Image 1: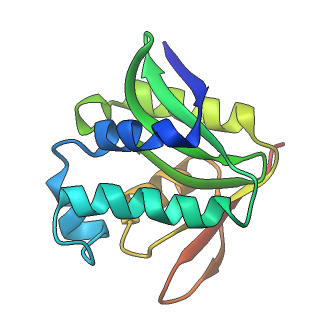
Image 2 (image 1 turned 90 degrees about the horizontal axis):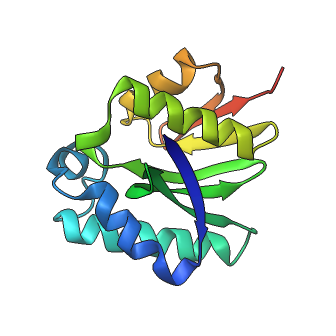
Image 3 (image 1 turned 90 degrees about the vertical axis):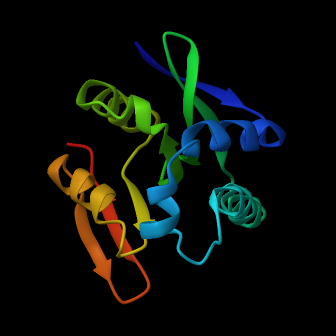
Length: 145
């Protein structure tokens, strides 16, 4: 049901836009430095571009029955950025996404803004632990058993 398809960086903007489409809460609660949803999408891709200049990253579309619903960016040791369209954030789909993330990684970390309590709590419920926390970010770690 859930699958990842590796995509080139040049196509990432399309999938970030799919993931964030209609999610105005994202701007209000998690990306409040941006003025609107368009800025959030563009700035997210710009941040990924800066990170890919420093670290080897892979880019994936997230699909349900081959229909794109979002994106995931990372490598075997880092979950850097991700998003699933709000219409598809069901328990079954989100847990399927999590299984795919764990399948593509070894032990890995994920850094989030402290305001992103929704994602932080999800990751903790699903086996990640807080490695480090300060006013600017929360770093979580996942260790495969």
